Length: 288
Image 1 (cartoon, rainbow, N blue to C red):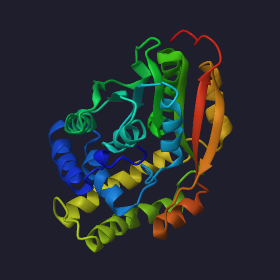
Image 2 (cartoon, rainbow, N blue to C red; image 1 turned 120 degrees about the vertical axis):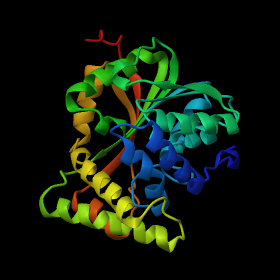
Image 3 (cartoon, rainbow, N blue to C red; image 1 turned 90 degrees about the horizontal axis):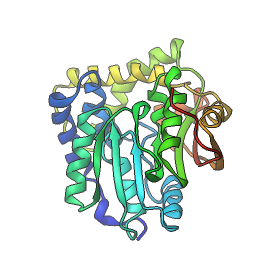
Image 4 (cartoon, one colour; image 1 turned 180 degrees about the horizontal axis):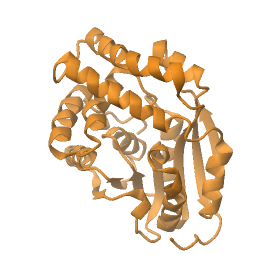
């Protein structure tokens, strides 16, 4: 059923688990995986949507037509897995979660076990995915902005190769102006305060001292500078899709849904969010 409560995340427990695993399993991505569930708790990010979102509804519509083998192409934690599990709860899905880091994969593996989901975790870069005609649905939720510009076309070609002929790519991406100058400085300095203040208001205990946790949040804010403005308009994404033999079937703009300081930031950089359902238009080009 829609919104199936069997697949509800315990975000506070997830935050503790992710922080601990990040210290043991992560490399350069340690900070992001240490703080990401806490950022979700504070509602200081345009991350996983809540309720029956446009994204979840798109997945529901696809699995209803018999598309059951699903790849999640990139995961920060269990948020997308939970969303997909809810959307496909009545249809016995087989869900594969892909990421380059062991931390979100271990979180997803644990959740899949608790929730008795069928599937696997795959430690791999989307750019190097080698699966031929295997998936009915591939979900790429914000992952493109984490891939360097010179590798995005390759990633899309690999996704195209992995889709069955009647498969669909569900692509969520943002467009915005670059985050730089005074605005970037204000964001980097203010972001830790915004997140920690909200966590305190919600009585969510920090996993370490305020100073150390604030330093992690500042590092994440700085990393955001490189991601914002990866795309300034949807046509740039369309060009990537076209080069991979993919075409837009439907596209919907969705609300970013932030208030307070983060809402002000989103407004200042003209951030827009899109869910796009994509189809194969021809045999995918060979991988370079």
